[in-house]
Image 1 (tube, rainbow, N blue to C red):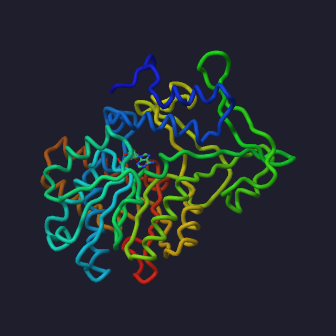
Image 2 (image 1 turned 90 degrees about the horizontal axis):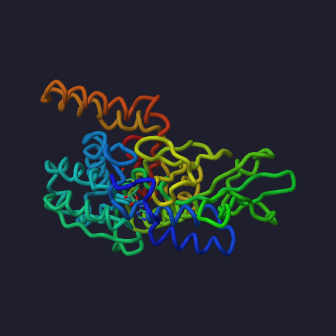
Image 3 (image 1 turned 90 degrees about the vertical axis):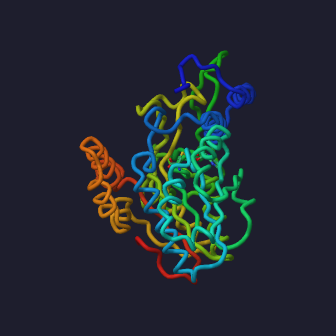
Length: 364
Ligand code: SAH
């Protein structure tokens, strides 16, 4: 772990502070600068980092998604070439587990090119290391735009929640955007509000516009843009996508911005660039932009039932049969974590997107 309270800000946060000297900025600008710096490090995920994700909990998660991809590929008529794309692949664990699980399906492994969309240099280095022995050529991209055309299967776990949001507050006279400002002469940050908007907040959902005075809403322009881009490509070129993340199935007002450091909640404005910042994913908004961009939408379903329908328990049973006593405990703990409603089972949702010519996706 590299993040200490005394950690001096990097270039992105310094540039942000310089911009804030000229006046407040939207939450999105602050969050983008902090997240860029935060993720660049590469040591943020896993037991020794700030937060743990499903693929870091158990190998079963990536294995199931790998086999899901193979079933989807077969249902597409087993195209000769297909791009397997992962957005925000973290430490590369999901993809490594998926590729290993695909060993019994060599015809799919031969058809696929793996494309990882990752902006963090630190995490790219970890992904390279993890996937070196996988026997499959991997290509890296800053953005989805450069992934070559053709049918694709897209996987994205806890990617959308890592994208910066905008927040708007509902007042009796209308809406104001929440902004971040310098608290004084130093570099401490504070929240403030912008001028009254002339109309409803851009990209807001119908449910947001029914907010009461004093409530606030969140929109994630980058998440909407990337989901629309995936959807448009699936509609035009074929394939399917899976977005797994945490958030409500229906749009609703609320402030879900949170900071995590070493597995504990932290103050969002303190230690910019050194804490994980996330917000809930508005799945209804994601489904709506995907449908508008031409994709068929399956789901939204809860992660627990989704993983169970893909065979989570059967796979756990096989692992348990071959495990030593303390490994057994770990496996049971990880499985519970993924499916229990008090853990990730119901807060986490799965959104499935596909080309409208395909049948409903497995698990939905
Ligand atoms: N999917 C992984 C990691 C989740 S953390 C897992 O489940 O363990 C979020 C990931 O998204 C990190 O890899 C982070 O570097 C990446 N990321 C964040 N913003 C991004 C962006 N704008 N474009 C591409 N990747 C991004």
